[in-house]
Length: 317
Image 1 (cartoon, rainbow, N blue to C red):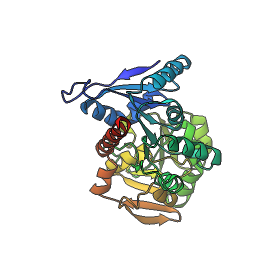
Image 2 (cartoon, one colour; image 1 turned 180 degrees about the horizontal axis):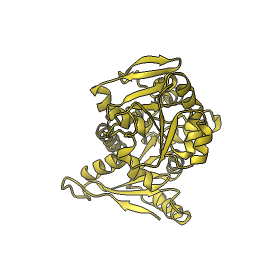
Image 3 (cartoon, helix red, strand yellow; image 1 turned 60 degrees about the horizontal axis):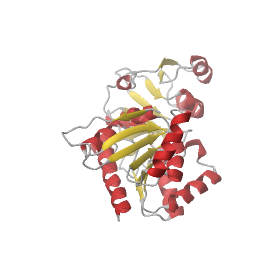
Image 4 (cartoon, rainbow, N blue to C red; image 1 turned 90 degrees about the vertical axis):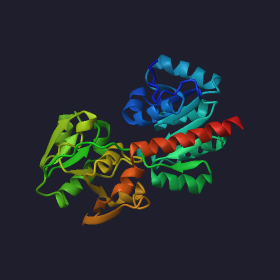
């Protein structure tokens, strides 16, 4: 069982408010995408433990026993598998972060199961990162404990200086977005190089983007993912809640090209981001400090902390 206790900051005793268990499909995802929240919870007076449902086959049974027996522990779950696990087994106060239904968006069965589990305990709090998912759940559950927060928050990173277009993906997702990437590059991206970051299956990348001007740089450290060019490309196809790399690009002030469908799905129009059409189905974001603040890591963490306090308060009533 992989468990990590966060470092307490700001001189606050870790025993002030008790324990928070941060669940994810794998614990490494918490460190990768939830580090501002981990630090904020620690400085807020919690002892923070990070665990992955899929870290080990033996660990999942220990986790099950803990969720059923320790009703005093606040559980925060992020990612679909761990969310379903926590909704079924957690007894204490619970905050569910619904990143996005992704490729399961069209599954009636999954959506029905999710709605049923969400209604079981009205004291739980639900953070929905995709604006389209938020609208759907608000319409079909009529729940008051739904909160829309756009993603886990972005952090400023260095941006490249040349005219290349940066695409940040994983091997498990690249096949779902390749058609969208190709559409942009063959229409509005002519004459520019596509820099593919994060994918290590070079044979597959070569097959997907054959005929395009591209280079694949594989996995890079987090601070270097936007250094390959001055433009960030957000394609469509996977159905994420609010991509972490999009939030990073916005926080960094990069030029952002996004499909019109994803612009609406992520709720960017509700956040005040305008757009300039660059090709059929594609726009360049027009944004400023307001959007950077709303999608920044510190803002998202601060709002999540307030929702955690609300979940604890509801549980203690």
